[in-house]
Amino acid sequence: MENNDTIFSDIQKSETEASYFKKFSASLIDWIFELALIFSSYIFLPRSIILEISDSDSILRFFIILIFIILYRLVCLLLFNKTIGMGLLRLKYLNSSLQPLSVKEKIIASFAPKVSDIKTYNNG
Image 1 (tube, helix red, strand yellow):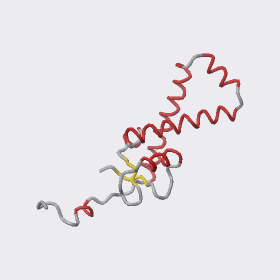
Image 2 (cartoon, rainbow, N blue to C red):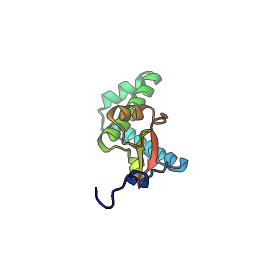
Image 3 (cartoon, one colour):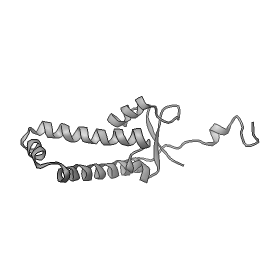
Image 4 (cartoon, rainbow, N blue to C red):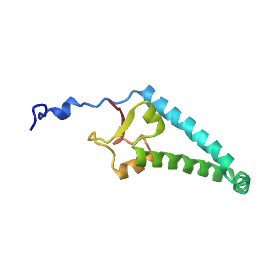
């Protein structure tokens, strides 16, 4: 055991939960980025696919956009452990025991980020 390691070293790194304003700001940044991705996908997708989507039911269009948003969050959480908004505002997800999220918890956080076991904390 080194001199700077004590049995209280984990208490010294106390995590503080992010404020509502920071969580809202991160969600707003993610929402703007998701809209930009959706609009840019209309530019880069072939016209035949766009015409099929626009001619389909509004429920189908809603589900396509919802799947796109969930995939964005899932890919960001699995690869980078945070979304772009969380990265810009220096936030992170931790579980109830203040540990980084497991793969299962990341999948849950991509669908329902407000689950009681997963909270947003300041990143230092």
